[in-house]
Length: 76
Image (cartoon, rainbow, N blue to C red):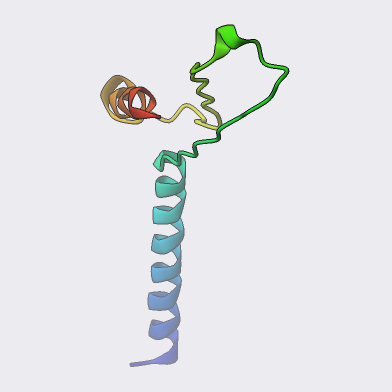
């Protein structure tokens, strides 16, 4: 195989990988649970759940964001 052909194949593979990473990175969901304990938090807030959702950049996570809503409901 000629060097020029190998370079084109390598470039195409690299661009394909980059494209896949960009699409996956914009639709991957990552969750983290953080337990906050403080004497400064009133007892009325005991067992409250706070969910922060950020950096979606207009991404749709399932139809009508169903996957995102389900993951939010399942958080501990």
